[in-house]
Each structure stands twice: as C-alpha cells, then as structure tokens.
Length: 105
Image 1 (cartoon, one colour):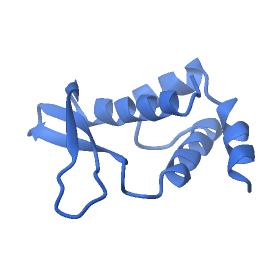
Image 2 (cartoon, helix red, strand yellow; image 1 turned 60 degrees about the vertical axis):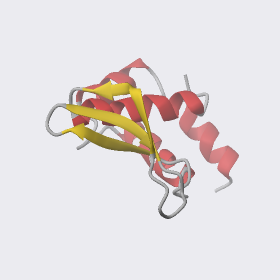
Image 3 (spheres, rainbow, N blue to C red; image 1 turned 90 degrees about the vertical axis):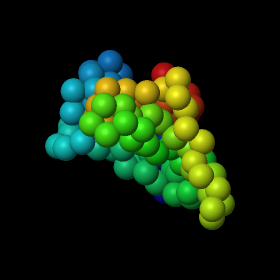
Image 4 (cartoon, rainbow, N blue to C red; image 1 turned 30 degrees about the vertical axis):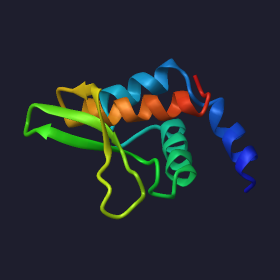
C-alpha cells in the first residue's frame, strides 16, 4: 500500500476516544482503530535514527523520552523536560508526540 494512502486511512481514526483508550492502556489489547494506528506508527519509523525510546532515569520512579542517534556509540538524547512517573505514562507520551509530529492532531 502506498505510504500516503496508508497515512490517510489511519489519520481519520485518531480521535479523543482512541487517545483516552491509549492513555488508560498503552500496552495490551486495543480496539481495531488503535491497532491500525499503532501498526502505522511501527511501520512508519523502521529506522533507528530519530526513533523515540523510553529511558528509565530513576528505577521505579522516573522515565523520560529519549531519541536514538542511529550512530553506534553515540548515546540517545534524553529529554529531561519530558519525564513521567510510570513506564505506561512514558509510552503514552511517545504515542502523543508521534501523533502530533505526523499532523494527526
């Protein structure tokens, strides 16, 4: 499927209900709409360079969003201003960040 067609078919699925579903359960069973969005996000960013990751900066207390450099030996950039109190919250933070970057909201 053409990337633009795939993007357009997924973009209209992003709504408040899907965002709330992901916030309450970022990892696990999801509705068909959320599954389709997540598949698109996974296929869209296959390369490591620029990929968002979760970095645990304080065990069991603080998780921040990071971004891979894609260069061996170069550590990820960690966004200290984008930290969360749980891994699930950080997962949702990355989801929102990617949705916004793609212009889905």
